[in-house]
Image (cartoon, rainbow, N blue to C red; front, side, top):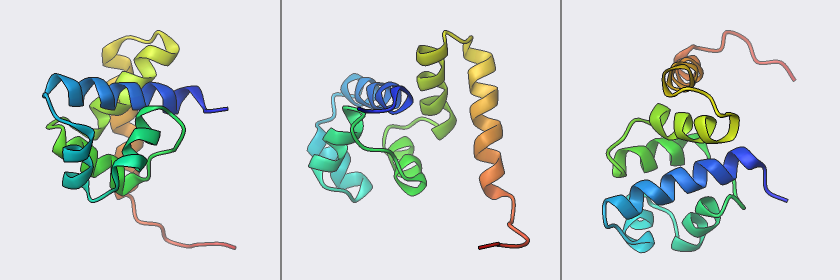
Length: 103
């Protein structure tokens, strides 16, 4: 069973892609993935890797935080501002260098 957050993220990606009148094949090509992977992401059956999220957001002309916020808003009935702030905070942590990796 797919995780609800991935279902909501996939729905946000699909909605934005359709709003731009873009086919799955065209979006997948722009991001450097195969169309079947994009189909699985949009259906929530496959998680999104960070580099894929960044590529999808760029191709869809939105920030990655906006895509994540859309998923949070729909899954938690949160307000747009709160969800966007949380998404931006999480994405900001990606830029924080890791000082030590443990195994």
